[in-house]
Length: 83
Image (cartoon, rainbow, N blue to C red; front, side, top):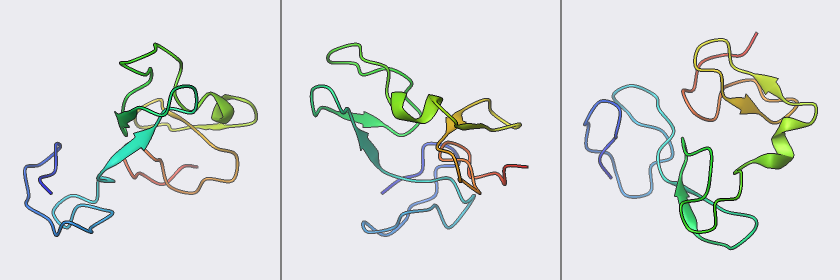
């Protein structure tokens, strides 16, 4: 799998990029089940807000602004430590 952030080629089963640490793969829309990029905020198929469950009691990443689930230590979008 090729990293969208740095272009490094990773093993097919890799979860994080070995070149920059960005999380690899896709997420799934809870409304329609469509696959979505991990950094997508809305589903391209049905328009639902992705990770809407994370907005209540979530933690906002200081680096990229992504709202992560409560209790998250590292951002799901940019993999930076959340303070």
